[in-house]
Image (cartoon, rainbow, N blue to C red; front, side):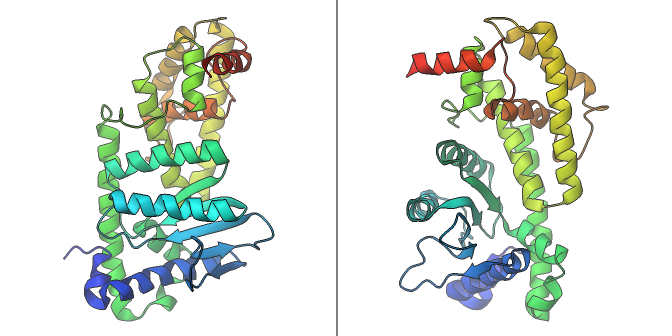
Length: 317
């Protein structure tokens, strides 16, 4: 029978399931980080379940939420409040949410929108660990067989299989359903301003591509596979180099449509050769990686794009 982390609730009740899930997270990150500490919720934990570092310095924070029934308005509120609480009190450099389930497409839309806005405003790195990734990391660090007894371990094997299949299904749906991202507000992002300052105004396609790139990056970073991370960084360098060539050929003082079109065409032409890589990075994500580079102000679509961007942003305030 297919199971998810709800099995732990059925066996141990809500409180017991939360304890087992939190134990997974604590044991994992204490093995990854030598200075990771569990934080006891008495009388409160200030939005910190796992603390990496010392409070006198910038810290890494993990927040564990046993949201087994999905991400509704109440759960989104809890996520926002947890993040705001800890970042309002402490110097946080990275913040991660740990959940037992797999995000739906709508969950990913909300998460991407919220995360992008927060990262842009605070410069704090934000990440997501869902159930299958957590269990996979336990196995990668040879912790899985020592932490859990046979009963729990067999159950988690079933849970991992189910979540991996569900995660793959959701990911494929995200890639297929490319016309349903208009409710994500990327309007204040740098990559959007970069497009607008280059007189590129039909933005939905590029927002979709950026979203797919964000999902791909999230999957790769969360898995922590060194080979995949290396491939990802190499692809980013290849895309940047390709953009440089197109920029020299097609840069225009005021209009970036031709440069963007030719850059996209080159990605399509090289998708199965020079840019061929791991499955998590499909054609849409590769195009979206251009806009991730633009978000970091490393590329643009018109001549003197940084100067044009700053002028445009100044005029639009």
